[in-house]
Length: 68
Image (tube, rainbow, N blue to C red; front, side, top):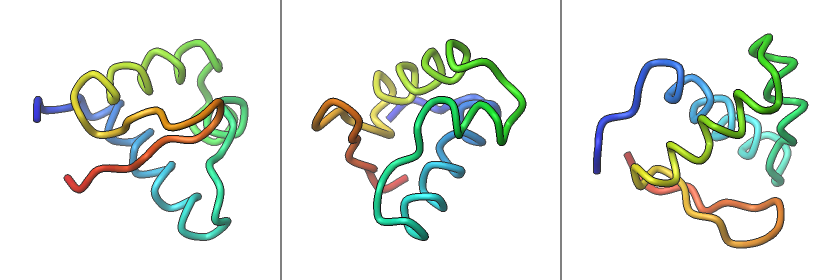
């Protein structure tokens, strides 16, 4: 697994915590609002996390979180 950047790991941590509290994944807007970033920036970070093996897409809005 390739190393993620600090910004990507911040998004990953937010997704993990949100999912554990809510049993579903946050929207790009929710992540962006929490981190004060645009949905496009969050989308780019999620795509990078997916390419690096931290997440894999399993549906329209769902991802599988891989062990780090």
